[in-house]
Length: 374
Image (cartoon, rainbow, N blue to C red; front, side):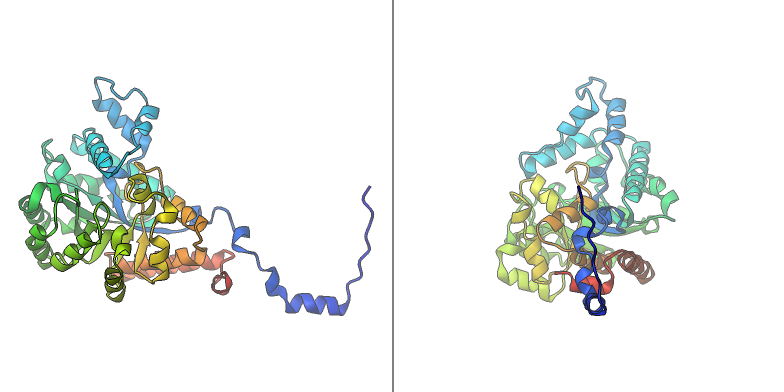
């Protein structure tokens, strides 16, 4: 049986409590458990074809898989398990076989952007790879028109820009051809050019003229580098292609000179931590260099790359980072880096900054609390 306890609170006791109230500020662990879910999000490295919600992709599989090779949505989900980076590229190619008509691209663009809005994305830059679909008779310009049709009704809720991706695998001639076609499409929210493909097989130097001309046409540029190859690959990209940003950059850590070079020039790095774990680039998140990059003040942002193929989201990425020592104040810095590196005008950037600041100020993490959180 509980006994009643009578307590006497003196003026001295109250004075002590009031003077030391900061000891009773809620810790980060006590803050809303949905913090990252509700957080406004900015993403710079997201491949649209790798972000198709599985139920939406299943609809396309049912439309085209007449032999019923994939028997269920569950089987489709199981396909997204990878032995290494090369295996991932093979699955990527297989998945694209279910995108055959322009209406398919409009459909997936709508499904992806609706999914991102549900996750509180406020700004996104979508990579898309025209060359992957040209053998099916898909025209690159009409492809972008179809993608734009799929997202344009949502511009009051999210800002979307596109990046057309040329592929190392198809050579610089194909890259130049795509550039000449896409230079006419800037009015469709086309902000830049990127380059993916098999980094370990195709060096960047042959694409030097393509990148120079892209800059002359007013495109921003980025390159996947240091993902499937070592730090030498990043040096080659920086010295020959001079991109505005680097995608992945996981192997920067191998070379202290390169790390200092990237740091001093504030070159934006589009990190994709969970992607690198899923494709075997790193063994686990603890082995990922994201912590060391952040501690060295590199200009890094966090991205999902191909979120539905890697079973991730920005909410998950930030949650995983928190588990290896990142604080919520650190996530704010990462989002600010993304805003500063985004390919949009200053009005959009200022609105994004305000939304992030307002969100932090409305939670327990006021600016004072953030500064005091270890």
